[in-house]
Length: 90
Image (cartoon, rainbow, N blue to C red; front, side, top):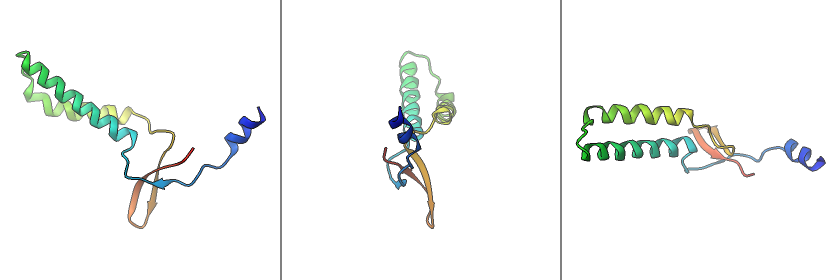
């Protein structure tokens, strides 16, 4: 039990800037791809929804990305060149 408390109170390591996409971006891209493939499948089944495909993809991608929480290791850091994604080591 004492080890658990010591682990929880230990300071987090310094965030390291990364070019790896954060979880929200990854989930948003996958959502867009899934909606696109679904629209293609519906069109192949003679149910053409091409008039709403782009707005539907945009809206669903936004909602899913917005609702996806950041990973426990994801942070942002700001320096002289702007704000960047960063990760921390466990």
